[in-house]
Every structure is written in C-alpha cells, then in structure tokens.
Length: 240
Image (cartoon, rainbow, N blue to C red; front, side, top):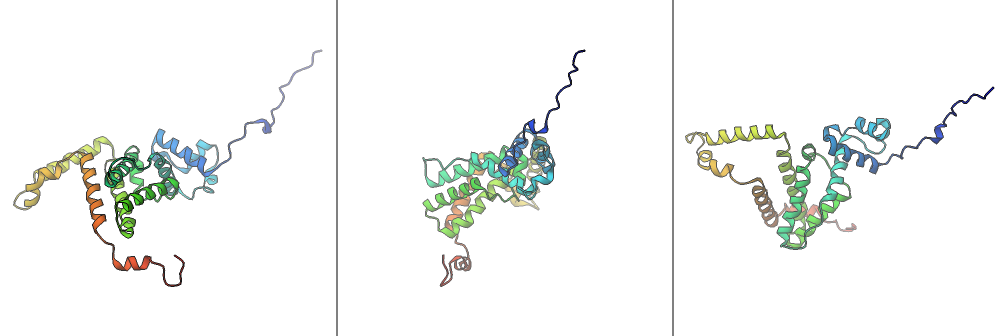
C-alpha cells in the first residue's frame, strides 16, 4: 500500500505579515486614493479596505476625515519648492504663492476642502516660513507679515476652489454671469453697464498675478490694530 499524501496545513505564522499601521502609511495611502479616485473616496472606510484593516484602527492615528484631508494637503505641499533664487522679493513671493495655487488646481475637490482644512504638518510650516521670510526681506513689519500670510493663502485657496467644479458646470456658470453683466440695464446699474468689459476681462493667470500684487502692496502698507500689536508683546516679567 502506498502512503496517502495529505497537503501539509500552512501555519498562519507563515503568512506574510501586514505592514504595521502608522500615520505616515495612512496618509500615503490616502494620497494614492486621491490621485486615483478623487477626494470623495478618501474616507476611513475606503482606507481601511486599502490597508486591510478595520476603520476603527485608523482613528488611533487620525482623529477624523477632516484631519485626514488636512494631512493629505500637507503631504502634497511637499511639492511646493523653496523660493526661487532670482528676482525681487515680490516676484519670488508671487511665484511661491503660484506654486501653492497650482497644487490645489491639480486636485479640484481638495481645493474646496482646503478652505476649511487646517494643515499643521512640516510642509505647511515650511510654506509659511518661506512666505514670512520673503515678506521680512521686503521690510514688511512683522505683525503685518503675520496677518498677511493668512490673507495671501486664503486668496490662493479660494481662487483654486472657484475653479474646482466640473468643467461643464463652471463654464455654464461663467456664461450666465457674462450674460447678466453684459445685459445690465444702464438705468438701474450704470456702473456695471459701464464696466461690463473690464469686469470680464483678463486671463485667469493675469488676474491671479494682479490680485497677489494688490494684496502684497496692501499688506506692506496697512498696519494691524495697535491693541493687537501690544497684546502680542510679552508682559513685564514674562519670558518672550
């Protein structure tokens, strides 16, 4: 009689171990899903499937979806390089802001989420440091620079979000706005009727550049409220 051969059971210990979960790994998986499927698919449930784990396990590393989206934004900001070497401080400042805007324009859903997301990772800090350094190089007072960075990033984010809808929907909305402005009654809306052309003129890149220049000039010349400046100073006896 020949001995019967039974397949040897495979121990579970021999199976490839799943990579240990980490915040970095979760964010990397989220960026991959964003690039392949869009921000709407970047959910805890979707990432749990991607990482072969349960959604509850992810909350140890990321508190909620908003924090996850902020972390994804911070990761993408790693592509925003340092300030260019050539040009005036204003030109270099505008170029850095343009790079930030381009990142958001590349991910339409993330642009809208970025209006309320609060990234706090290393790439976001590097971006803020770069902007503050350029404003300091231009002699902008520190308090004005501190408030100005927020204003500049808000405008860049809002501009990207404005162009983040589906192409057809965005075009339909712009066509409706053009018709409304050009058809304005000179009797009831004389200023609109007189400026319908300029209101609609300019390529997006030109308008964005002009807006940054206008904001930079305003930040340079507009002091913050004096009480705010006093409140930001250390009190007597305190360590700065």
